Length: 437
Ligand code: FES
Ligand SMILES: [Fe+2]
Image (cartoon, rainbow, N blue to C red):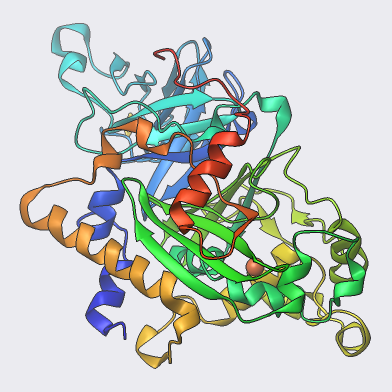
């Protein structure tokens, strides 16, 4: 059981919280590159309960900083993004993307102390369509970006989506680690006949109650959910939790399973799901089942506004019960809610903004969730106690060659060995390791 005190550690990520401080020691995806135009409008970004402003300067460099001007705290959101920096509209002080004060326009030259003033700017980086921010203590010398395969492949091969969820980050994360819901929430009314002969995923609807294996790793935790397949064979679904808030669920065969979903805390009750899917990450034979029965479920976005919470919200949301169709629920799909993502969104948000985990009755099917909670709590407590960081915070290579995915292995074969063999045989989609950035 998860105690109230553990739940506090797991769900609070603001400044000064044990997990928030630990998460800050990692690079976090803050925005899509396309959100920021050179000399364009500043964008409000809410990250781990910090109100930040992001802008792209004349030369293309991205700045992300506390939205409060260091002079008298007027918001730099209203600033003028001009000629290599952002100028506060209150008294004209100007800051570059690194937070250096370039101009103290309302102070006579002999009283100028601009060299002593810095906006609270964080280190930023950009790679393949994502803007990253490092909010940790090593601002002068941050670690390299994590070598997550999905973030290394060419931008044109990857679909990048940001989707806001109105609940705590861990609810989305735990949904990804909970593979048994697939056979109900998503495929509850899908029959084996919906799949083409030999399609891997048919085993999910043939046997909806898998068993689990679990392991700790250098990057976080991993599970293997298994069921019998053909004679002498086992069907595996392998997935991962990777620090600080990434998941790799198995959507298709491990050969092509470049699917990465991060649940970035905006504050403790809002999360930005950062979703990267490779164009090859599709499961032949599952398409018909998914499209005809579950619904293709595109994402219907409300146009972005400029508020802290106004980015990437869906128009199918809790205010309209995700447009549930009860007739469809009776006759076609299990939920009457269209599409896998929206189904996940609905159940995660339905638990409440921060689920009270003392109310749960956890089962063996929740093993990956309970173990991962313990793993997270322990790491946060260890960091708070003596500053020891997980290896993943400083060694980006631990993320190399990790994928979720589905595969068939001989019955009784060691699960981690089978996973590694399958992964070794799968072609990489991006050259690794990276040249220094
Ligand atoms: S508050 Fe920004 S320049 Fe005065
Ligand atoms: Fe799901």
